[in-house]
Image (cartoon, rainbow, N blue to C red):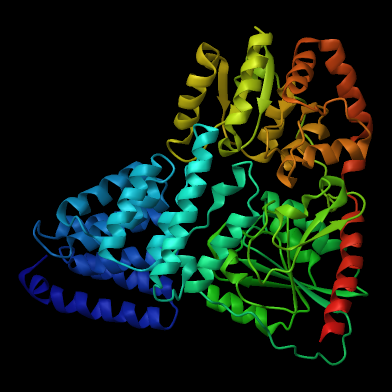
Length: 605
């Protein structure tokens, strides 16, 4: 570069940066990228265009590119530059977007070395560490709250619960601690939260896996949340001339190849259109074949951003008769969205199979086939027990080809494989003694579990199992998380599927039965532990349904060790399991119940 070019470079770079900003203001992000790249070429030593290009690439989803340019900003800032913590924060965020959690953690810790009270770094590091070390995460959140007081941080800290509990006694301590923190928050009368989907950014998700009655505690959670995020208890009823059909809006962030999407598609598809208009509100939708099937099954499909206010306003404008949440409690946006009265009737179903606790949710839609006598006590909503079969037009899982040999899957031949293909947070301490008894009773047996994506969770479970199973824990192996077609091959290679206590399988049990692999289950008192029972009842086979932990072990061992018996049970399952799939019963039953409920609501008005 000649002397004149070097002298003109700052002016040229500034002009290109201004052109990039103008392009961004007009929504022309690709043009902005070109201008910013040209600005960098003109004056590479300037960190500003690198920072702006990193932001644009991040918004375009090019996280690797964003990471490179945020790193470039740091390379161009002096060691004592006050902008370094901000640049490091951006780089750490980009590393997280790229799945580089450990490297992101390293940068957050470096920020805290410079500024121990940096509120954003404390929050981000706490969230990263929550699964691996909840005590450290809560300590970091306490420092965050000291730097940035308010209800959001206190709620976020209260909702930090262990992913893996070590003992049943710990569960009671955790729940008592949460209740105490909620009471302290309410007594403090903190100011309101405007954007809880971001500021709180969590729900007390892991309460669902404690095997306790969650209705009283989740009611207290919702009451505490409503003190700082009031929402609205009533909605205006807007008459719609012309169309007399009930307008039902289905709401979720999981309308794609997710368990919620798979179990809700049938309801969306099969509600009778002569009586219902069906609108799907898909929040932050992910494109895949199931998402397209849901889109094609709706009368109207509305994609919504991950923004609570915009989602609420859009749903309100639809003038719904019924707001139907496919799940509440799995993530913060729909949880706090439920604090608004969006329709005269609001209901939730078992996408997350536990009560919401929210007082603006009127009904919990379940089924008589999977609810126990007296199970109303487990819900803050009025329980709707649909008659008949409970799985709404569930597509039968099918192997993508011949069953793969175990060697192809990295599994051992000549062993009896007892597979429990559940998320590891479903492994309640009460399930440890049966696992131990199965391994003791079958020297050729191995437990096959599913790898966990987040760091530290597997290690916590194995620490507990090392204590409760002793040397038998060496006969536990993990299979990788994989696409559904590959996951189904692992299921087909198992001898027995084990349904864990208190919170068992639903989709995974459908997978196993579809390929003829028996599932051993001990039905719980509450819905999360009763789906497999419902499947067996529908096909008239209950030989794999235990009445006690001891019988559970006996059934599992007989299936595992006796190949002829296992084959006979498998043949019975295969002969009958077609009844479980592609049925409209649940949606038709829901339609009748919606008409009845909406009629009662109209009479009250």
